[in-house]
Amino acid sequence: MRILEGKYLRLSLAFFKEHLGASLFVLMIIVACFSFTEYGVAWDEKVQTLLGYDAYNYIVDGDKSYLTNKDKDYGVFFELVLTTVQSFYSSITGLNFVEDFNQNSNQIYLLRHFISHLFFLLAALFAYKIAFFLYKNKWLAAIAFFLVVLQPRLYSHSFFNTKDIPFFCMLIISFYYTLITLSNKTIKNIIVLGVCVGILINIRIMGIMLPCFIVFFFLLDMLKDKEYIKNLKLVFIFLGTATFVLYITWPYLWNNPIENFITSFNNMKNFRYGGAVLFGGKVYRAYDVPNSYIPIWFSITTPITYILFGLLGIVLITKEIILKNIAFLFNAKKRFFLICLALFISPIILVIIFNSTLYNGWRQMYFIYAGFIFIAIKGIHFLYNKNKKILFLPLITFIVIGFHMIFLYPNQHVFFNYFISTKKEDMETKYDMDYFGVSMKQAYEFILERNKTSKNINIFNCKYSPLFHNFYTLKERHKSRIGGLKNNINDADYFILPYGHRFYFDPKKHPTNKKISKLYSLKKQGNTLFTIYRLSD
Image 1 (tube, rainbow, N blue to C red):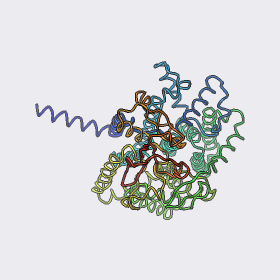
Image 2 (image 1 turned 30 degrees about the vertical axis):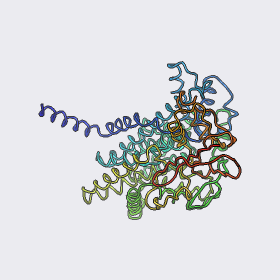
Image 3 (image 1 turned 120 degrees about the vertical axis):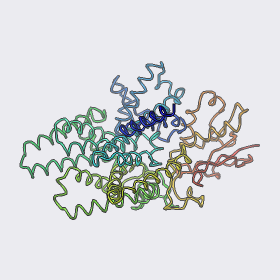
Image 4 (image 1 turned 90 degrees about the vertical axis):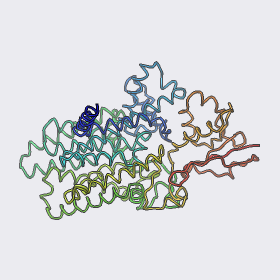
């Protein structure tokens, strides 16, 4: 019996190693199946959901509500994917998600979160494929996979952020087909790359940077090979495919493609948001943050070992550019690293030049991490060639980060590394914490668990949209126990104070004669996400 068990174990390990990328992908899906229900609803989720509904109904039924939606200049590809899945689910369950949104929102959000996270895991699988293509080493490829899924902030956002994470994911997928196409410029590869780039630009218009580099290399080959007609044909096929896919997947462009594209580009360059952000203990307007905003946010929320590997990779790429000069531009793999470096550094420079509006944290710039992953892999590969035992360093790092993520679950989006102190318990006064408000789901659950007898629990809303949205994630038996979200503090039994500057609560504006007692604070890494207060007569 033991011999058979040993044989099966060896066969299982051999199969796992043979299909390492797919095995890791399936493993992380299993993890998600046991955890995705715990993530709350973000501030923007309902708006994004309804934008997807409007676009879907415009395409399917000709409903023109989409044309009056204030966010129609957002690319809607990923929202259309989610809405299509919801529509299919509706046909099975008989639910009408649009008409019964509030009633069925728990199921809607859970479905959205799971599908969104699947796309994130698919991007991790493509990161594996890229690293394997570059080095033909499964362990380096596995490291690339984990550099995606073990970035705590991105992992958590992958459930509820359908703006920034899908762009990051699509960029990695586009990277893969860019590498394949630069290595073998067949018509098939160019068409597939064009499809990916069209979708990429749809999701976030900043994606236009990638085709600029691709076309540059095509034109460079044209000058080198003197094959003008052939290379111009490839450029035409690539740009034609990308443009066609962008047009058919973005209804906003249908009426006036050129003008509306330019309008969207200008709007996204300096978006219509004048809110405040908390950075380094100071409050700034989103359109007037310091130039150090993105570099510092990246540095304090990315695991330190990852940063060190990335810095080594940057040095190596820079060294190769200097030593090999023009020759560096004619090698497919080196071109790929040049694109990664450019799409890591240049967006940061551009937002500084354009003085772009930046939201809380660096979530709008999460996509720069896509290029950074492969820069870091280059650094790890260099060390691996020096000493193969170096693979233990990323392994130990992943174990440590994994434990951090388990401890933070389901609030990995408030992860900070040890470049800054997380032990003084004052980070919530220096940096935006749970600015998306997803922890409000946990606040509800604590109150319901603490007060099991009352059937009419009133909570002071104070116009917190995340509090309102997360109410609809509750199961029906729990919703019925919440008497209401009260705008008057004197009508409430509890109020919840979230930490994140957009949730600022001024008690002077809400005077009350009730006795206020602190009930509970949710802390992660010693920092407060929210505090619940009991209001009593």
